Image (cartoon, rainbow, N blue to C red):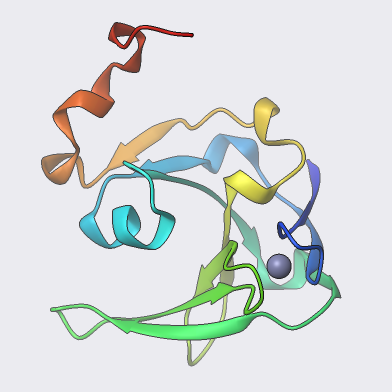
Length: 130
Ligand SMILES: [Zn+2]
Ligand SMILES: [Zn+2]
């Protein structure tokens, strides 16, 4: 599936081919902090199928307790998260769903790090809608 995205300020734009069946949610505490949201949704694109169309993301390399390093790409102007990848040898770009134009059509198929999921976020239908 072809997708394209743009950060909030428009400085960075990209396109990619993704398999929507690989989309997922992550409830880890790092994703909560980086996204500013209760969980983060992503879909992977292979390195060869990701194209940066405009701008240059800033990179923050996160080091996990395990020592694993992940490059977190975001817009240096507006802060929109764009993707995460290996800082040394990128194979896939885990694209952040929130800034992909086709996000409504990409339904996450699995959730990970559920042990740190926020209890209230497991069913937001219980929250009154305005
Ligand atoms: Zn931006
Ligand atoms: Zn995570």
